[in-house]
Image (tube, helix red, strand yellow):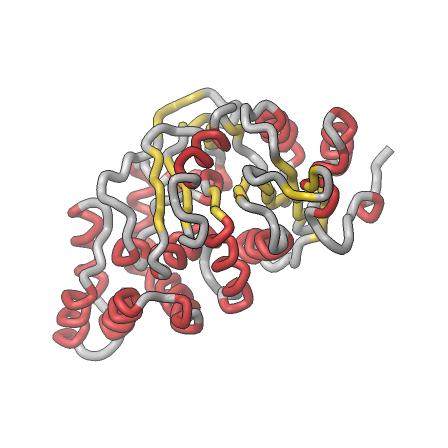
Length: 333
C-alpha cells in the first residue's frame, strides 16, 4: 500500500528526540542531511551505507522536494529496522536542490555538533563519518571547519570506475571564488561552520549549488577546510549527473561550452552577489579579494584584466587558471 508523506513528516524541532541521550546531545553526534527527489531506485543502498557507519552516533533528516516515486516505503522499512526516532522527514521548499540542502541545514537546529550532507544516489564507505570527525575535532570549536574529499566514480550499478581528481593545492577563498573542490556528498561541518551556513542561508537563495557556496563561505570567513585525498564515497554516475564527476573529456567540453555561452558568468554573478550580501561574515582579506574579483567582471578590457590580477584568484590547474583569463578577455567572467 502506498503511504502518504503526511504520515511521516515531523514538525517542530527536526532533531528532537532523535539526537538526545539522557536529555543531551552527544559531543560527537552527526546530523545527516539527505536531500531527496525521485530517488527511490537508489535510496535504499545509501540508507544501508549510513546504517553501516563505524561512527554510531548519528541522526538523519530527509527532505523530500516533491518526489513522485515510492521513496516513502523505502524510508518506512529503514525506520522499522533502525530506531525510528533517529530518522526525521520533512517536505522541501521545491525550489531546486541547492535551496533544499540549505533548508536542511537550517532544520538541523542550534545544538548538533556536526552535520553531514548526503545525496540520495551514492553509498558511503563505512569509515566516512569517522574520518571526517577525526579531522574536524583537531580544530578549536569556535573556528569554522569543513571536511570534504575525493570520491570513487562508479557506474550506475556502483561498479567502481576511477577515483575523482585529486586537487593538490590547499583550499583557499581565492580558489573557492572560481572553483568548487568539495562535492556536497562528501561534506561534513563542525558547529561553527554550520552556524555560518544557517546564519546566511536566506542570503543565498540564488546560489548555484549549496556545496560551492559552503566552500566559499567557510574559506571566506577564515575557516579551515580539510580536503581528504582518500575517497570515502562511492559516487554513482548516470545520465543526470554525468558532468558532475568533473573529470571526463565530455565534462571538459561541457565546461568550455558553458564558458562561451555565458553560463559561467551567470554562476559567478549569483555567487558574488550572495557573498556581497554576506560580507559581514567575511574576513577583511576575503572582502578585498571579493571586491577585486567583482571589478574583474565589469568595466573595459584593461580594467578587467588588472582587477583579475589584483584578485589573485586561481583554479587548481594551470589550464583552469588560463581559462579564467580567457573568460576575462571575452567578458564571460
